[in-house]
Image 1 (tube, helix red, strand yellow):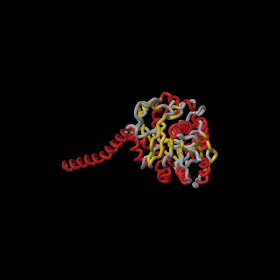
Image 2 (tube, helix red, strand yellow):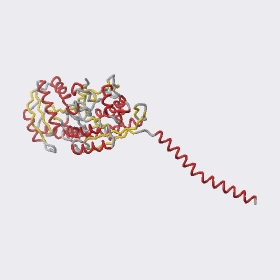
Image 3 (cartoon, helix red, strand yellow):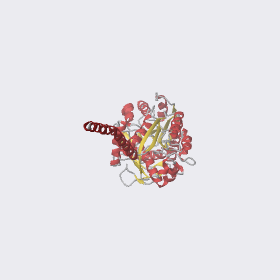
Image 4 (tube, one colour):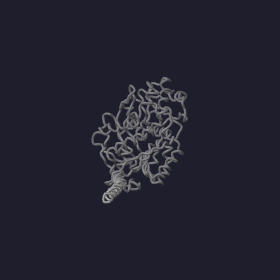
Length: 410
């Protein structure tokens, strides 16, 4: 009898032990879950709204890839610290298709999903179309648009992300007058608001410098693929310089081909950024000597941090684009502004805007003592521009050669 009782007691103890095992594991999982929840970083959401298809696709794609590369770098280093709290960066990108209506839909989506900081859009019509949505939705955005009204009072939510054509154009023309001896210039532009505005500013700058503007009324329609008729008219006065006002990366090589095939031997320039891969692939030798505003870096001025960004960018995008040297600044500028403003600015862009004049950090991408600030007082009456270097390049032997480096900082 005693043996039976002893046997039953052993069975009972064993059964209780087995029953306790799942509970122990469940308890352990709960504790692990609690620990994981405690260590999980909150998320800082950054939007990218830009043109990622069509003739200007490289402009928006570079914005996207720069944001993703920067996010990857910040996250692999443990996140971004704001008021003592670390945040993981997540990037969401939306294609505007360079259509104002599509851009508005994308902007409304970003607002509804709680985004307060957005990079893009890339041209005037889409940047202007989203302005009311972002203003009413409490969003600060960094468009690559040259429309001065976007950045001037009473508008406060847009920050120019690059050097504008009315800032670089006069500098380029003056340099070409002094170093290449140009005396006459012709302008040609796509028949859209952004390029037409850039043409106006270019003509004004050329006249002020004393250049002979031999033609400026020639335009081409969106979707044009045969540029020989318009370029025939442009080159008939044999200007020393032809300016392709506001030209997109898709149109530029076709215009170059037309001009060179028609026998034009003079200089050709633009104030918009370009894609060297596309120029080489489509224009080839006809791109030789083409002058344009490049990315805000050169091998001579870039730091180790810039070199590391280039490496990560190439991992994300598959290849380097010179324009990334400018658009690398957008996401860090948002971070620097948030760090100056404090965590209140994570949900209240008014706090961010108030702190912008106080941002003053060492530029991590350029050698020397150059500082990064929000500038633009001279042009817009308020600090609504990223202070990026003005790098002007020309194509030489299929590569980029830096002509000079300037600045737009106040």
